[in-house]
Amino acid sequence: MIVVTVRSRRLDHAEPTRRALVDSAVELFTERGYAGAALDEVARRARVTKGALYHHFGGKQALFEAAFEAVETDVVARLGRAMGEAGSPWETAKAGLRAFLEVCLEPAYQRIVVHEAPAVMGRNRSREADERFTFGVVRQAIAGLVETGELADLPVDALARVVFGALSAGATTIADSPEPHSAKIDVERCVEYVLEGLRRR
Amino acid sequence: MIVVTVRSRRLDHAEPTRRALVDSAVELFTERGYAGAALDEVARRARVTKGALYHHFGGKQALFEAAFEAVETDVVARLGRAMGEAGSPWETAKAGLRAFLEVCLEPAYQRIVVHEAPAVMGRNRSREADERFTFGVVRQAIAGLVETGELADLPVDALARVVFGALSAGATTIADSPEPHSAKIDVERCVEYVLEGLRRR
DNA sequence: AGTACGACATACCGCCGGTACGTACCGCTG
DNA sequence: CAGCGGTACGTACCGGCGGTATGTCGTACT
Image 1 (cartoon, rainbow over the protein chains, first blue to last red):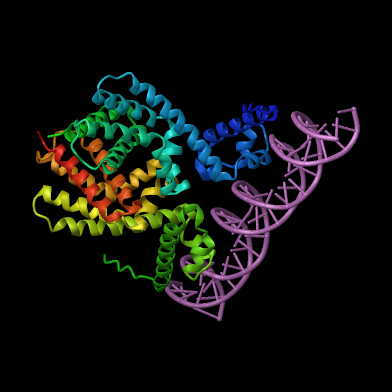
Image 2 (cartoon, rainbow over the protein chains, first blue to last red; image 1 turned 180 degrees about the vertical axis):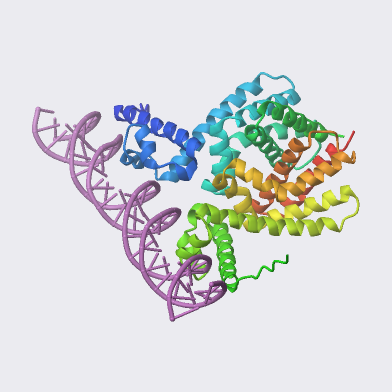
């Protein structure tokens, strides 16, 4: 039996508005944070009304999570490209590190994923979501290094969390620094030194 | 000239209500987060009205910052006691590390300081505030270790931020873990390994 | 005793998230 | 092609909550 799923033409109309809503949500949440962004204005920027918004999303929180996913999927894709070009596992990890620091400089990632998400979605939901995105990438890299014996034999989960925290803090430091350039040099030195210190010894 | 400042008896009445407000603010912000805590209920738990609240504080944000400071000062005091008993700088640092992980398990610190503060107070204000409290302690410890040559010669600011991030992430991991006990063992192993890796080599 | 001021209480406004309901348009069926 | 059901919105409204303006009571000071 062959089932041909025909995309309704109505969906061709519905999806663009949905995407427009997510886009303006990412914009406004980035600019003013979760509490500061009014749903009326999110809808206005997408040139629809709140009715449309509540048709596509369950509420403000659901809209935020959609924005969160949009940002994360984009980031993960770029991280994948940056790491795919490297050779050895160790080189891959370092390439990922640098790419991740770059990503953390972007306002949308900083505000939505790093700062607001834990408070808005709750710690557990935020953690679970991260698992499927950026943190998942870091975890994979760490796991690979531990398996191949490059890194010391430590519990992967805990190690990945600690390293991820160090990376995020470093990135935040760079982003908020009055002199991002020199700050980035300092942070990269520290992080690389930390990673070197983790090598099997 | 001798000036005797006589504490007005009115202040003896005003300060207890102020403290009661801060206390119930810490409670409610911990339970329901910043957005979920209604000022009316904060006042109600302190057995006053919103009028009293707005007499003592400029607004919700100011109240949050007062709660933030209350939590942090308490934590710093306990950290100081825990570290004062140790001998060498290295031992002091390790004692501080363990004490800090303990602190991070407390809901009030987790919710108010770690998760909500960056979003509520803004990243820069939150960073500046931290500087005067918990992060200041960590920074001091790191600076001491670098000066005495125990740690590698890295930029202190960046290093302190990275280590602080690693600690916070580790603590969050423990707090949110389904099995905090084993998680704590894992995290402590990782963090100690990271610190060992930072020793001058 | 009168007065000034601080420490609250009360009443009210405006914004915003959420809900209920109405409407236009599309695709399907007989 | 007429009628019908359902989807994709728009409109109108409610309620909660942060913030403000104003009133009141008690204390210290003269």
